[in-house]
Image (tube, rainbow, N blue to C red; front, top):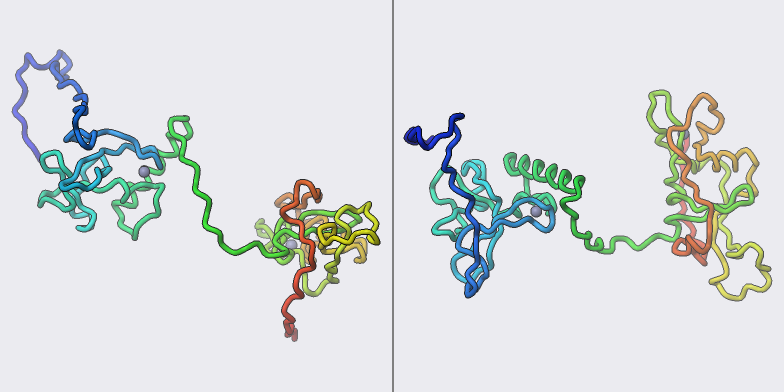
Length: 291
Ligand SMILES: [Zn+2]
Ligand SMILES: [Zn+2]
């Protein structure tokens, strides 16, 4: 709460707006400043999210720090995250006033969210919306994401080649996870995979990578392709795989497709990273208990 004396009438235009508005301050850097920063907020934008930040010097020889440009109610900010400005320098603590500052990093939507705090979370969400707005209007381009750290190495059958109806297809994912594309009665996508342990299985086999090669003249393993072969299955079963439907939806003409099938015609030149030259290890034998 603050009070101001009513301004003299000659300071007001006919509509009540102040005539002598203080012009915006232009910040200049003194050429011999060791930090190249002025002793007051230097406006900038976060390179990761595009939102406004203010750079402040700190005491000592710490690096300058980017703060969120607005004050927040101190009680809503954890003590460890409070900053205040004194004599143009940022200090890592509250100053006993009901308002404080926070590092931009505590709110930056491009950095992982620290443990929940309702005010900081909602501010972070609004900054994230602003990032999207800036991005949509072409005023901000997020930096390219660093490559994610390597997780699990690709499993041999991450995207296996499947042969059916005498054609080869690259599967959208591991055999056990190729989803049925049918719509269920309650209008959701069928949750079942098309591979059914109770249906006739295909066989893993090594076949010439280029079908016109004579298998008798392929000494190099690189010329062989491990594929999951269904060509010995009944025609109707191969059609079911091609239509990407689980056994329950194989013959359910009233069930519409809710998604497209995701087979890709296999092309050795395009799909070379999915080519496996050796058969996958046999699966661990599992006992099926069926009553
Ligand atoms: Zn940011
Ligand atoms: Zn289904």
